[in-house]
Amino acid sequence: MTTTGRKLRLGALGRLLLLAPAVACGVAAGQAFAQEVLRGHGGPVRALAVQAQGRTLVSGSFDSSVIVWDLKANAAQRVLRFHQGAVNAVAILPDGCFASGGEDKRIAVWCANADVPVRVLEGHEAPVTSLAAANGVLVSASFDGTVRQWNPSGGGTSQIVHRHMGAAMAVTISFGTNVVVSAGSDVALLRGSEPAPLRLQWTAPATVLATLPNGDVVAASADGHVRIVSADMLVVTEFAVDRIPIASLAVSPDGRLIAAAGLRGGIAIIDRAQAKIVHRLTGPGLPVWSLAFDGDSRTLISGGADRVIRRWDAVAGKPLTSTLPERDVVAEAAASGERGAVVFRACQACHTLSPDDGNRAGPTLYGVFGRRIGTAPGYAYSEALPRMSIVWSRDTIARLFEIGPNAYTPGTRMPEQTINDPADRQALVEWLERVTGAR
Image 1 (spheres, rainbow, N blue to C red):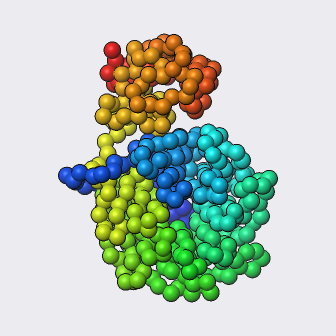
Image 2: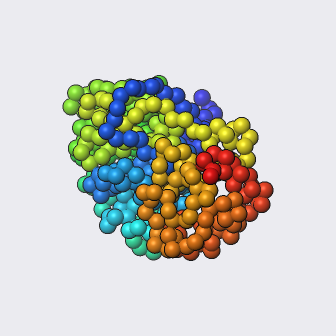
Image 3: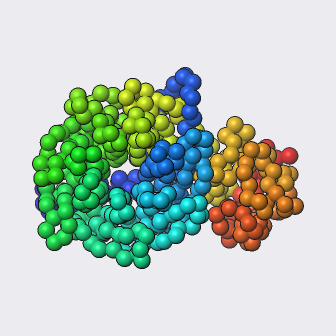
């Protein structure tokens, strides 16, 4: 293969991993589950991270949103909209903060219950592909070929620790040492920092990285293999997981289990003590774009192309949530040419339409026409809304999106958004009236 040919093929791989359209397939299951899937994203779930000792989950999606979930209540706490494009990575920071990195080249730092970033880190010249954090240090990889190290609590400056000849696809921080390890489409694994990091050349680019408690690094590659690499850059163990690129990877906190999923397959669970794949977890929502272990080192969380988040018992090799395929009535209506459904796609992450789906980060819109603001059953509104006298109708919903929530409903937690085209506003309210059980 020529050098030019390799660059073209690896560039296509990078675009596939970050921007590929959702491909859904699934199996039906007639079991009853104690936990339900987490619904809220309007696009494939691209990134997952667990914080607060397993009480909270942070997810990022192709729909450009970040959602903070309460895992005990099985519900969304906040939907955060800042990035202009897919959110490709999230990473947990100290003191209840976390970072998100996106296709828009920016990294947002979120803290406490703020609905806007406390800091925005800029410096990359292409989409951010991966984030990792440890001991107050944040590192990022980008399509621009660089890996940058940030002080997320500082002034937003960074230093370049690695330079790849192609896109930097993944980054991690070696446990206990703060040594940065990154992988690029130049088929190189780099460890250390500029100007002379250690280099390991692969036969296929590594697409995802994770760290083991002993400081070794787990690398999943485009050839479908998962490899464990020691601190002196030797491959100590190798597992053939699939014949296609690995899209997601996670290591249990105790280091015993490795989970990996390919672009068209299910999830493989590797037991390091047995040195083999012990389970294959299959279900809908393929490909599985993101994986994370809960703090118990047993519960595995996955995000798929069907926009939902599922949980699995990785030790027993069984699902903890439904594996029934999801039906997206909004996508079906949008595909059939219903303009109102197309406009509503931006609202889908926060609001449901049917009586069975309940509230998400925003109240359900079922029965919204004729309902007074701030009165949807079971939803915790901000204090200002129940005191208002607005009754939702075609005119009031259209006005909300004409001037924006902050102007029309001051004190709301609803993300600011407007619909400038009067025809789009009309299409939205007419479609909503038809599908939400208008009174």
